[in-house]
Image 1 (cartoon, one colour):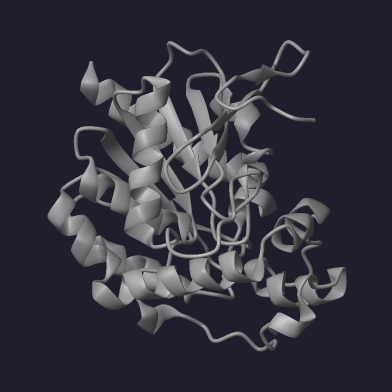
Image 2 (cartoon, rainbow, N blue to C red):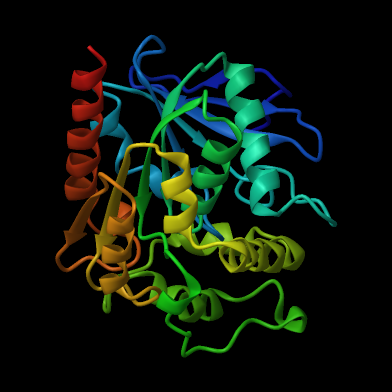
Length: 284
């Protein structure tokens, strides 16, 4: 299916997802919208080697009260995968801001999963007018919390990788024994080697420059942190480091790994909605 540049495509059902391709400097960006267009905006940003599809299980619960916007970052999903620069976290954040401007969104609560939390933070750093609050889901606060992977990285000569290779690399992104969805496998294989490595390096560089709690403290935005307590990529105990940010709500999800948005979508959505309800009540 081809979506004309800049034109929405609405699937033929009552709970339709509107998909668009936005031509932006540096490459076209694919995004999805669900829910009432006059409801408060909730922006969902996926992590590395993922796409808008990683949020599919949560969307039905969130659209009851929100206009849900999902975006494929440059190099991911159905967005452009150029060779060269543009994958840096600040650049990704600026691109997301432009996309929201094109949609006419004036303010939004921004949610990031894993490295998507860095893009969400960068967006808030650049556009304090646009971001009203942040939710970070299993986003590592600093490099000291990172758990080195046991599996070997995929070499350029092995690209595109097989399903088995992808499942080995992606296994730490979930709790032990969780069956990795085929969509996740397909998303990683759909990336170019350059997009995959550049995105990974960009996330590390962003943390090397400054820890996330330090960045968030300077921002002064309301913050909720959700962390699966069985995360095998970032020490779950490091979620407590976000308490350094005044007023932060930190929630641990028992039994969930690095991807509670897939492993336990109902509980993750409930925590997110509780936070947005508090924000809405204080805004009234």
